[in-house]
Image (cartoon, rainbow, N blue to C red):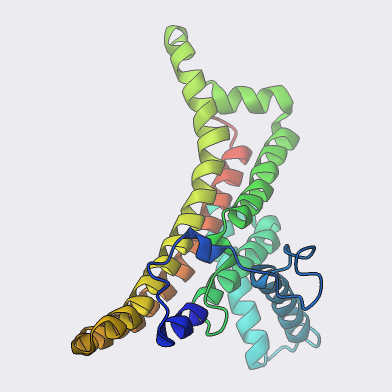
Length: 265
């Protein structure tokens, strides 16, 4: 975002923003053509992983009965996910899934937060590949859990064959199959991707729009300032979306696990 803003300030028009703004160049100083895969997006994913590992290792390195501020923060995050997501959605059995859901929630939250952090200003989740991978992990997990508890045939039978009269089962079975095994992963991935993609585009439009208008006509300076004020206001809105999307993705993953553990359809 800053790169395009600087170009606009220099007098070169690169407006409006497009999907190409999400395909960033390599940040490695050598072999740019061979190392195109290591972009700022890649670096942000590694930074997010490193920050989370260091944070939780540091806070639980010497746990105390009376927790320090860091320990309290880490315990609060884990307690929130365990009690308000894992246990609320799954029941007492959800405690054993709390570490996974905490990791999932924290990773999505941190990678989403990059969207409003200066210098970074884009979330890895605005690329569909990252939500797809996260969805694939949850997808494989809830199917595997269902098979382990009920057995292969019984699980798929309970997931696809509802308690209904036999003559409408030919209609219901394809619907249940598509709903459980196709639409669930699709909507889970697209929801996260679309929100982060749209948020970045909106911030980009208002930021670059201010530069474009003031460059086109000096009399539009007040409108440019209004555009930048809107950018600040939308950044706060984007923060709420960032937190909400991390929560929603984790809650839905927990609900799918709960469905796999349920005895009936």
